[in-house]
Amino acid sequence: MKKNKGITTFMGNPITLLGDMVEPGMVAPNFTALKADLTPTSLSDFIGKVVLISSVPSVDTGVCAAQTRRFNTEAASLGDVVILTISCDLPFALGRFCAAEGIDKVITLSDHKDTDFGLKYGFLIEELRLLNRGIVVVDKDGIIRYVEYVKENTNHPDYDAAIAAARKLI
Image (cartoon, rainbow, N blue to C red; front, side, top):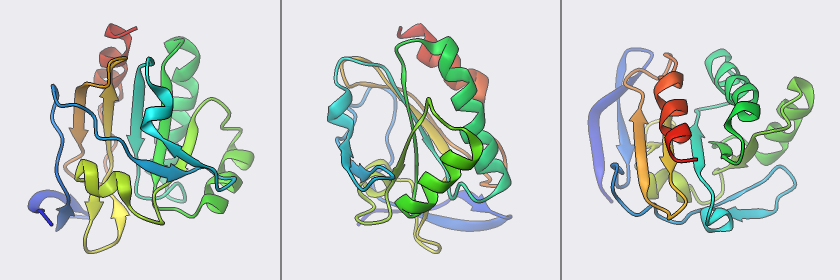
């Protein structure tokens, strides 16, 4: 398994990302994760749509909650873009969070079972078994057009750049 050390930090400490990091121009690897109701959902379920994948360590932290709320708000202006928020939180925790926060436009997915997304996209933090914060935008043809691996996990991603990348593909 590929290990990417020193690319990013968590609370100032270097961490190791497991898996193959992705880049714009690559075919987006298919992955499967679980919805809050335990239904398996795959990237391939959204073929023909622009998909913005928002990766967060845990919705139970301030920055992750804010990131999820921000994309839920932005969803209305993005039209036909599917927004997925993915973490290693349990599906039940994601369901509770969405109910409490009124998250209704973002699809939350749990990568806790197989870490399929984390490993195929190089977002899995070895030391914590959480996902690194970041964003991936995939076009209607399944090609990655934008990627951000946030360098410090306690920082916000570049929302404006990700939203602009998604808008260009609509």
